[in-house]
Length: 180
Length: 180
DNA sequence: CGAACCATGTAACGTGTTACATGATTAG
DNA sequence: CTAATCATGTAACACGTTACATGGTTCG
Image 1 (tube, rainbow over the protein chains, first blue to last red):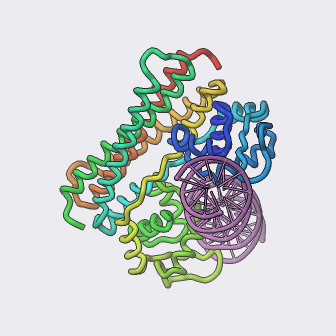
Image 2: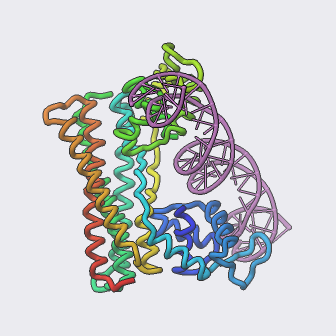
Image 3: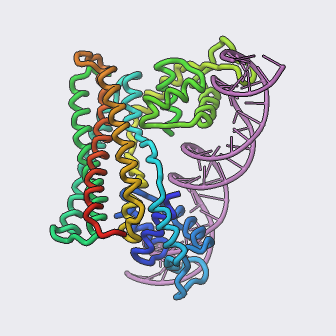
């Protein structure tokens, strides 16, 4: 039950239509909660039915017509409730670690190339985050909102830093391993 | 398409019955790929139907009777194929980061207590991993299999270390924030 | 006008979660 | 024998993914 709350957050930051939201999920919020446009339309429908959001009057007819939504007071209340409610951390799922574990049993044949590819992808993501940090969080801005957003971005930066370091270590191990 | 391969890996390490697997997923493999017993039974059925595993002859009658499985050659081949195949990393999903982002909009009321709780949980998990490391990976054992397994465990240790540090930072930020 | 693209959706399926059902075994 | 527990499952639903459908707008 997180996607509806991700959408409420995005809509509070700025009322938007479905595809707008999809694009904004591709940046920012989507860095730690991705969603396809199909999911987003489905959730927008539910949120409207529950009275948490409403379509802006401007234009709302048939298919193919742009339709923007805004958050209603009940929606904001629900988001406040959800943000404050205790939630257990869910165990991470990581395919790459699973594959390493499998490789310990069936051999490492072919795995190294994909580790290199992942290392490259994580380096790019890290560079992207660091660019965002330079651009959006210059020193000195210490509004509560900016500090919280910066905290989230730093989590992303530190996680990507971890992965690049760990993958580098892993590749060093592979270099010293008997083939397959 | 990862759970079946997690199960194949576990069964190659040791043939087991459904509940055995469930318990082993609660430790070890489950640290980065959890699964409930319902999921596991469902997948065992599929894997058997596909000819990747088979029930051991010993005893296999009706309900309530223990039923152990072992991996067939086709199952091992499939696991080798999957391990070597290129796979894109999936974007992480993290509810806590999402809640921080929401808090930047609707206020931090009530969130701090849950951050403390998470910090405590991550510290415990870290301690558990470090115990496992001391017990299972004493210096000097450098078989290929041990080195790969150790690499996976170190990822777990470093991730938990990251979260404890980040949550500590986050709580310091909260201390300096205007309430709500 | 036609092609490309924008925007909103539907349908089918796979995976994960929750609640419950049933037979076998063990402890008191 | 009864209750608790072990072990295997079923059913219903929520969420995520993939493929496709349909109407509107823009540009050559």
